[in-house]
Structure formats: C-alpha cells, structure tokens
Amino acid sequence: MVPLNAYLMLAAAIFSIGLIGFITRRSIIMMLICVELMLNAVNITLISLSHYMQDFMGQIIALLIIANAGAGMATGLALLINAYRLKKTVKIDLFRDLRG
Amino acid sequence: MSVPLLFFSYFALATIVLSLIVITRKNYIHAVLWTLLLFVHISGIYLFLNAEFFAMIQMIVYAGAILVMLIFVIMLLNVKHEDHLSDVSSLPIPKAFLVFCVLGVLAFTLQVSYLNSTGKFSIDLVNKISDAKLLGQVFYSEANLPLIIMGVVLFVPMIAAIVLAGKRSDE
Amino acid sequence: MLMDIVILIIKVAVVLGVVLLHVAYAVYFERKILGHMQSRLGPTEVGPLGLFQPFADLIKLFFKEDNIPLGADKVLFTIAPVIVVTCVMTSFSVIPFAAGWVLANINVGLLLVLAMGSLGVYGIIIAGWSSNSKYAFLGGLRSSAQIISYEIPMGIALLAVLIMSGSLNLSDIVYAQEKLPWGMFIFPQILGFFVFLVCALAETNRTPFDLPEAETELVAGYLTEYSGFRWGLFFLAEYSAMYVMSSMLSICFLGGWTLPPFLTNLFPILNLMPGIVWFLLKVYMFMFFYIWIRGTVPRYRFDQLLKIGWKFLLPLSLTNLFVIMIIKKVFMP
Image (cartoon, rainbow over all chains, first blue to last red; front, side, top):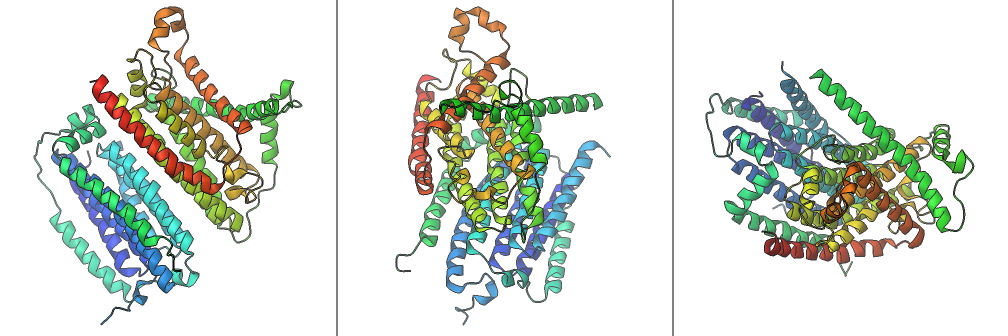
C-alpha cells in the first residue's frame, strides 16, 4: 500500500520543478508548458487526498482545474500569436514597452 | 518490496526525471514531446488512485488537445533558432536554490502521519459504482453550480481565441 | 500469478496475430474489390486467385532501401510510425469480440478508444515536421487538422450511445442493446450512426477525406519521405484503424456479437452460432462499405472537408444528442 506522503511529496517535487522552469526559462512557450506542469502537480495532490480521505470533492475540483487549464491555454496561445505578430520574438524580457 | 510499490516507484521516479528533462530542452518541439510522455506517466499515477476516468480524461484533454494546440502554434509561428538557444534568464542558480528552499518547506509541512477519516465515498463504493458514474451522480446533485459555471468558463475562451487570433481586416 | 501472466501473453499474441492477418488480407481484398468495381481483375499472379499477394508485398517492403532525409530529425523520424501503430494496437485491447472475449474489461473502454485516437495525431504531426520537407510539413498539418476536427462530432455521437446504455464499458453497451426488442441502438440513433460513420471515414484518412494520400495533391502528404518498412507501418496503422472503427460501429450501433431478440425468438436455431461469427460479419460489412465508398465517391477539397466537419456534422451530432436525451427521459425511465 503506497503511503499518502509519497503522493504529496511527488506533487510538491513536480510543482517545484515547474516553478524553477517558469522563472528560469524566459520564453512564453516554455512558461506555458511549466504552468501545465504546476497544474498537474495540483491535480495529483487533489486526487490523492480525495482517495485517502474518502471524500469526493477532490476529484470534482480536479475536473474543474482540467477544464480551466484548457481554457487558459487557449486564451494564452491566442495572446501569444498576437504578441509574436507584433514583436517577432517570444522572449518575454523584450516586451518592455509599458515599463514606466 | 511488493509489486504495486515497485510500479509506483517507477512512475514516481520517471515523473521527476521527465519534468527535469522538460525544463532543460532547447528545442520547443522536443520539450512538448517530453511533456507528452510526462502526461502519460501522470495518467498512470491516477490509475493507482482508483480514478480511471481521470486517467482517460488526462489523455484526451491534456495530451490529446492542449499539447496539440501548443504544437500547432509553435509550428505555425516558426520560432527562429536563436530564440531557442538564448532564453535562459540571468542568475538561474540562485533562483533554483530559492525554489529548492520552498520545496524543503513544503516537504516539512506535508508530513501526514495519522489520517483516520472514513467518509461517505469509500474505496469500495468507488470500485462498485464506477468512477465516471459516481462523478456524474455527485456533479448533478451536490456540485451542480460548478458544472454550470464550468460550461461558461469553457465557452468564453472559445469565442476569445477566435476574436483575439483571427485575421485582421486591415492587415 | 505467473500462470495468469503467461495466459495473458498468449491471449495478446493470438489477438495480435489475428489482427495482423486481417490487415494483410484487407489490403488484398481492397485491391480485388476495387478492381472488380472498375471492370478489371485485381491481383491474380501470386498464388491461386492472387491470395499470397500480401506476403509478396511484405517481402518486397523488407528489401527496399531505408533512407532518412538530409537534415531530418533522426529520432523523431523513426518514432513517428511507432507512435501511430502503438496507439491503434492499444485500442484493440478493449474491444469485445464475443461475450467475455475481451483482453481488458475496463470500465472506461469507450474513453480509451477516443484517447488512442487523440494520441494518434502526434505520429502524423511528428512525421510531417521531422521530414524536413515543405510538402510533408503542410500535409502533416492538414491531416492532423482534419483528424482533430472530426474527433468532436465523433465524441458527441458516442455521448448519445453512453446516455442510452448507461455505462462506458463496451461489453455493457452490448448487453444494454439486448434489452431493446429490435436489439440495436441504430433505431433511435440513426443520426448518430450517420455522424459516426462519416467521422470514422475522416479519422482514418479514407476517401472522400483522403487528401493527404491523394496522388495528385502535395505529393503524398506526411508520407512523402517515408519508404520501405516505415511506410508499411503507416499503412498497417491505417488499416488497423479501419478495423477499430468498424468494430466500434458494430458494437455501439449494431449490437456487437448478439442478434436482435425478435430474430432469435423466431428462429432459435440461430443461437447455435458462436457470437464471434456475427461480430465478424458486421465488421466485414463495414470494411466492404469503406472500400465501396472509395471506389464510388470523389474526394473533397480541404476547406470543404473542414466546413463539413464543423458546420454540418457538429450541429447534427448535437441534435442527435438532444433527441436521444428526450427519448431516454420519456420512453425509457
């Protein structure tokens, strides 16, 4: 029987690795991929807790998160297409027109 | 070591190694394909947790739709090779160290030693009524408001993506 | 424990062997039937009536030169056919050929078939992109856009089947059809059947939606740079996908391995035939329909193809869903 701590630690590790990728790789595409990694880590936490605490709301919230991830990704990619049309680059450090 | 524990340790180790590989790829298409492999392994982890519907939904939605969208955008944008090489930020090592400290804090606080809860939805119930059926029952009785809101949340980006990224008439 | 694993491996080997033999002879029968429809004989040289033609083709494919284009991504070029074949063969593990004859009786079998269809797109995208050729790249993008557009009406048509049967388990869908007096889901769901049929044609890149493989368009689409055994793997995947779609059609809409109850009440002698015979007859009927359509109908242009998928099939499948919801609520409580 796999202990609950293993699942929670695994999810924490994936979340941290996604966070490292998010703040280290400075292109919009890699940042979108790392956001997906972090959302998956949250899903693993929710579903494992729902399994061990025998409560079903965890799985419901996880389904809502999957739907939200899809919607967010679609909007983010639409914005990425527009940004690339404007500046011809995906490096987020070069989008500094609104800096004060 | 029992057989389920052996399989779980393979999946856990593979997930961590694959996520490390994903964030260090230079070519974006390779990064997306390693992410696809990572999602297949996460789908396997859901199978350990009696959530077979989630395993399939993860494959269909994440691996089959979201990543395909990402690959299409990467191919259509035709990102130049110089962008692939030089997108690491300044000072990556101190930033990574900070995140490892955050991981250490999480590891310290997430130790659950005693969990004695018997709720309404025991493992036997989820095995008897299949996961998908139980999800439908709960969604339409207790959590019907999130279902309706999820409909709106999925509908609005459909329109938003077409409006934002469509062809402009004055271009 | 060990005995279970050995028996499972033997079952998997049997299913794989039967499927590969069926695929080889599907190619032979396609050439024969198309030939007869076009007033000519198909292959007749190798063996009696040309029956050993598939083996001759296989040996020829082994001896062709295996080249990878200059500048292509070697790893991705090699992996692309493997992805497509793996996904299609995995779908065969949940299909019930007769009562209890299924390799993996999981509770979400229908979703697994949909998931493997979604994953098969990756093989095509990677094949197109890694070939380092303009024709292959455009063909890959077009083909994958076609496949993902037609997945949605297919999923909604299967949703109507799920409403009427109450379970995602493919065996349970067949058992739910036995309760109706005419034994098939096709009668309340004729619209859903039509939508699924058209989507099955589009998902497997068959005429009238076979723009990627047409000889006069874009050379050969995503397959341009593939030769020899890798090309053989892509075609193995295509014909196996045709078998998977035919099996899904016969399980979800025609009653799988069972006959309608009114027929078995009239002629009890029909119960003597094992269920797999009826299943295979229905699958062969759909394969013949695939080949018949190929010999009859002209192909669509790419924008017409996408228009059909989004503007015609999607509203039709939603209408079907709505009608089935009303029928289930009113007539079958």
